[in-house]
Amino acid sequence: MPVPELVLAPTGRRLTFSAHPGERAHIFRRVGGAAGPWHRVAVNARCPFLDEDVLAPGTAVEYYVHVQSDAAAEGSLQNRSHLLSITT
Image (cartoon, rainbow, N blue to C red):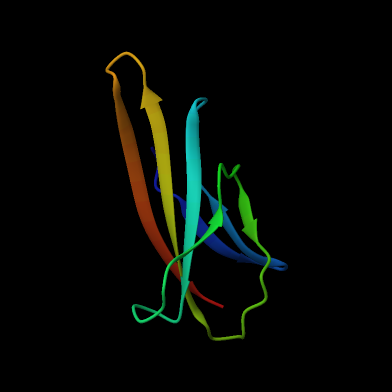
């Protein structure tokens, strides 16, 4: 999977990632650095994902993209995860 991309957009933060049919992307967000808790902001997200929550300018925000697929042929789950950060 190509590495996801996170950019500032006029209406928020746009997260672009790759997911194939049968895969589910769950997106988590943490505001304020390592001291902040992770919150799930999207379940079964589509690409691109636009986070339109208003954050104060200069806020550090991190996103964790977790892509999960059912590997039916192998009988197991396969997971891919990426961590991205940006300052508003």
